[in-house]
Length: 153
Image 1 (cartoon, rainbow, N blue to C red):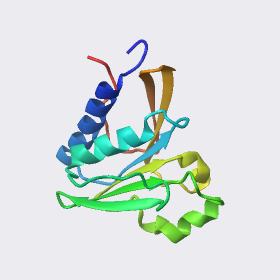
Image 2 (image 1 turned 30 degrees about the horizontal axis):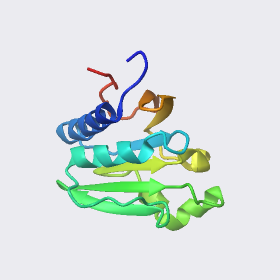
Image 3 (image 1 turned 135 degrees about the horizontal axis):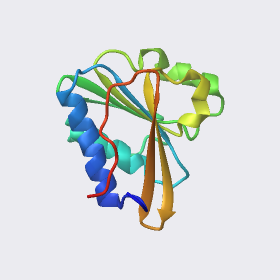
């Protein structure tokens, strides 16, 4: 993956992450999605959710902050902290319960609540390397469930 993943490859990797989690231990999987506006955070979050089994439409949670879905006996949370004014405001979102049990939690704009993010988790950094390519770097925090490495075919 010298230059990065195109959108189809990013989606395929996200689906693989979701499917891999379903086939794995089933403990909580928290993905803190980091990147500039338009980097592909929402694209990746939707792909992971699809891999878990979410089939319903997934609108952006930018204005609602949190959307919850059920799929295959799991809860899938898509969180967007872009509009968060203060880090402490996350408590109003049911933050204490995120990252517990059989959940997949994807947090866009995770840097807005860095000190309060669940551990263990994956910090997923997405960077545009060209107009249609994204470099993805995955950093474990604590001991999160394994995920496949991002790679282009």
